Length: 605
Image 1: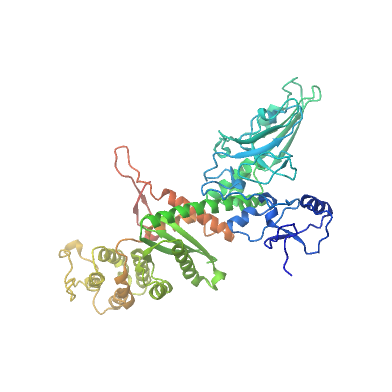
Image 2: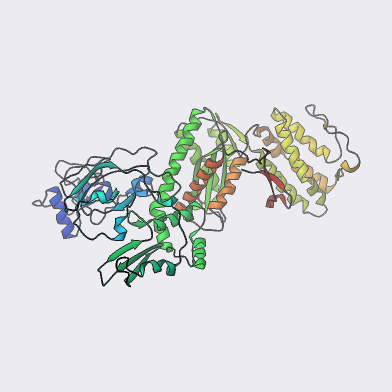
């Protein structure tokens, strides 16, 4: 027999939750549903439609796709009638559970809240006399089901946390109830933008050793919650007392703890590095378990939500611009546990999709690139992106897939990858005995490949110009191909002469075999004529800042850091080149590892 909801008039079978074993909570359920006099079978339950969003402990994880099963809180109580559903949130409004956590995402500018407050006159302490902007308080008063703009209700059902501004105007000295109906909170204080200072403990406690009323010594006690310091004063003479906190609370969590966790993640650092720094400086920090909890419950869902918004914008722009030229490449960690495939809109120079693949998903690390490529291309096509051409490296699996299943998309090879592969083969060959002269031609041959590709209009012309280098290294400058019959340079004399390779020698024969290999000549016809994947390589270098290869991350952490890197790249991809006070463009001289001691000039932003 199919299980159905036990509430009268509701026959839903989706998301059933069994009656609790705790007799006290079970009676609350029966009273709220008006079912005190009925008996139920052991498998009876109530469907999820009779619970509000805050009744579930993992609502955020389910919405973000990290979980599929809703889990009830221990004290959750259902409603007899399904509560009015909340309209779907706007795309650019942040989730309520993740607002104001000291992150780089745009916070909500305002918030509606309807609360009922019942406070008795009492001595107001120093900590409660200040206005807590955009704080979170538990009013202790039963609240109605969650709606976008709730009104006051007299039906006590369940306690609910509401975001309110608790200034003095919300309390009445006569002890009567005051109600704020749909008031807009404005001029909010953004806690992550407030300046912080390093204060020594002994200097801080000096401020609390004297009673501000009678100036006598007071009893001071302190409580530490991560980065938060709470100091309590009590004067035995005038009965003065106060409770002071060093930082505001956000959803009952110290704002400093949240911002420290966010700072670790957003700067691409690790908790271990920050913890060592704080310990060396003797600054009070948080525990690793606290960091992991806030990262899993708040930061990762927030970053995932923001990336979805940015990705939607990138896809919408790509669709609006018509046919798209995509570039794709994979980056593997060492040891290749994860492989991240990046798909970039080469015209807009924006990362449009990231697919993270774990090696055990596909059997081995060699299949990760193919899996990530298929996932990414399928997702973009489902979203309505019209792909005109695709630029990748010469991965044989990708070539076969495009040749057999995507014949309508033009597939090109990236010039930089071809030059890189050719240079590596020359480096290996030059290490052989008697083959050192091959290494002297490395830079010239790679430059010739770039020149052949950029100055040609057809694949046949590229092959003709490229093949001429096999004669050029032997000091032969006339060629049989009519498309490129002779070298274009002037006769080389004096210091311009090179270390020519003698014909029929081992160095010349092996070098020529690399230059004129059948696969290379075949692939030269498909070199990308306009776009290249240099932007993807820059993005992969940026990933090292957020996800170093010598640090191990979980799957969710790795995906989160990749999304941060993508948002960082897209935000800065359109920056103009820096210039001097006189208007001259600025460059930087760097010595990258792959240049083997040689320098190169880079743009300065």
